[in-house]
Image (cartoon, rainbow, N blue to C red; front, top):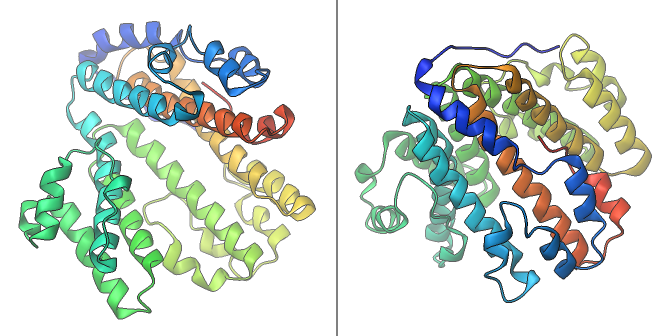
Length: 332
């Protein structure tokens, strides 16, 4: 079993008490099953009335506006972490994801000479209007160094290659995860990010191998993980798991690749990866001092929001409950 790092920190004593209470409001498997049994999107809204999402859905005119409710719940969680964390660097690290996301949007907008403001997310550390002003006026010195560095690297890669917009995303993602590792304010958060990197790289390797494009792996991979998936380059798809027999990822690779070969679908591998991360979060339930439960609660809520979104999309598209269930990751 993979061992998670611990660090005792009495500053989180108050936050821990709140988190333990808040965990009781998280959707469990039984509640998710009830959501899946809903006959329509409106029934799904009704089933969520006594959850954290209830107040937001009560403001909607239509269940088809579900994304507005999920955005409000996500913002509530960010604001909550800001209030609870005695270490400001933790919520800052969480928000950094959206700084990099907005950098992608604004960089692609500048290159395409189009307005992509609808894709910006107002959850980052850098206010959107300040970010836009700096980019539009080429005052990159007004942006944090890690954002300047990511922008410069992405632009250089774009113009030195085939001017493929996908390159911008790949380079910015690589810089984002390196920033997560280099600036992580907690051992558990750094560890969680490293596992994310491992899993993203493994998914990338499998996907490119299946598509016959493994030559693109070096450009697409992320740095900062604990394993080197490139050791499986050149192998047959079904042989990939054996290279990771001594890692915690062997089982999910074997299961996910077996399903892929039988069905041509990556859904099983995606679900197993999500479940692996949720499994790590669950192990913080036994920690009674430190930042780990706060960090785990944040990621558990982000995963839960993803689950609710997937159910809504499935119900709106009239997918059978069993088909939706096949794709859903576990909840905390």
